[in-house]
Image (cartoon, rainbow, N blue to C red; front, side):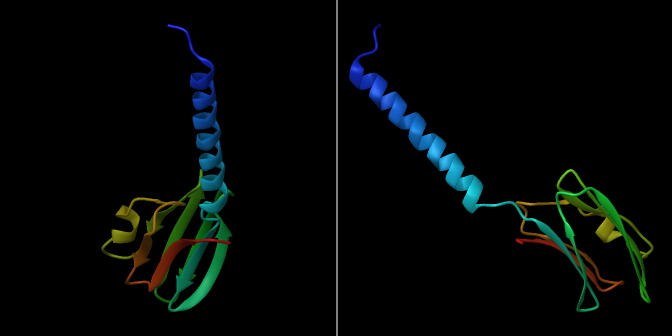
Length: 113
C-alpha cells in the first residue's frame, strides 16, 4: 500500500495539531508550583514543589513533618492521636486536594505560583 500525497499531508497535519495541543497543555495547565502550609488560619509558609525538602512544623498544638520529594508533598509524621494526615496519599501538582491535620489545625495544599 502506497501513501498518497494527501495521506502524507493528513498525517503531518494530525501530528502538528497533536504537538500543538501538548504544548498548549504544558503551558496553560502549568503544574502547581507552591506547597502552601496554613497553621491555625495563618500562612505558616510556602515551599517549592520542585525542590526536595523536609519541613518540620511545630506549634502549640503539636508537631508535623512535611516531606516534599519528586514533585509530591506528603505528611510523613505527626504526633496527633488519629494519624489521618499521615495516612493521606501525597499531594501532586494535578490533585485538587488538601492534607488536613485537625488536631493541629494544619492544612497543606498545592497552589499555582
